[in-house]
Image (cartoon, rainbow, N blue to C red):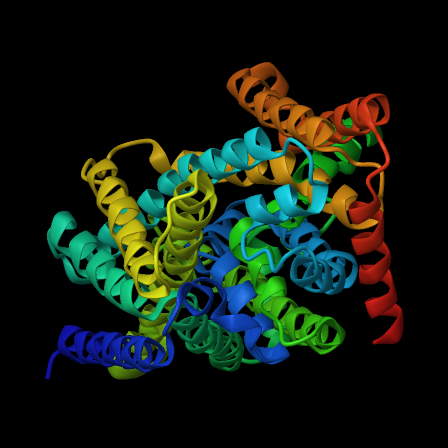
Length: 499
């Protein structure tokens, strides 16, 4: 068999496993709570792997290695920021959010948690939050479809539309029927595949290059700053270099407001299990980040030092190394890891969009429906968002992929400060939260649209800080005592203390 045939067999096997997991989840899902939150029954290891896989899309296997291959280790600050941000999220947000969402009338979405946590006139806040989710995630899902189409063009020479529809269709099937549980269990399989690929590829490559010393020497001979985490410090000056690093590492701030990630916290079996989940998450993050970084640095030693081995696109360094050093079938499984990264993110975002449509918009208007009808509506929500995202992705040359960083900043700045204040400050009000959310989102939009500002600082930083300031000022001005809010806040703290 040809190399491409082996790789296609591996890809087909991967797709079959994903569909099988989706069918299993479909058999286990009987109501809207199960479809949206797996009835709060996730084990800590499952929640951790699912959160990580749904977070790290194709950027981890292609974008990060490509950036480091081009510029050296200084580009690793984004990975450092994300790892620290993920740890802080599990440490300070996960246990409180798990406890509080159940106490606050069993909230199963972020918009519904804001409304039920803050009481009062929270309807505008909930609607605004749901709209923010739908807008940003529709673009997010569409960007994943574009990436999937381009993956099949570069890997198998397929037509762009055919590759996009295939990946989108399979992701839609297991998400449509399996819901949150289907997305979560496939995330676990995909997360394990990603970490295995990112650990094995650099190890085999180092052995093939003659050991770590030889790989290090080859890489530094091509780029003396390849292993320098502080490259450019002297050239740019301490202030501007530090500002650039803060801007890059600030990606970690986004974790506090990403609905498709923090919803995993809400689905844990109990608040105390966030401790185990945090450890699993940290180990996964470190292994994958180090693997991606080493892959890029070894790629410098292997490709850049030999004119006979040109690398036209740095973002393909991971894919090319896997093809060179592995049997075609194994290389196909490594290629499937890239699909896993894309599909895990898409499926999680589709479920969150569905929950925003059904739980935060349809149910909020007071329409009465049975559990079975709500489940059907949830699946229709997934289908609607997928169709719109697919239509947006028809143009493979669109700039939609550039909006991924913008959307990450939008969620982080619009939701992140409010999540933290909701969990740690009793005086947050619905009016203050709405004002802060609007301020954060608008700041991200304006700042990100002005190149002179965006080039100096990632827009999530000013958006996050302004949201925080506005929410605190307006909440202090509009605060009135609410016995129910105070009682629930105390109950949350008591539950955490007991666990």
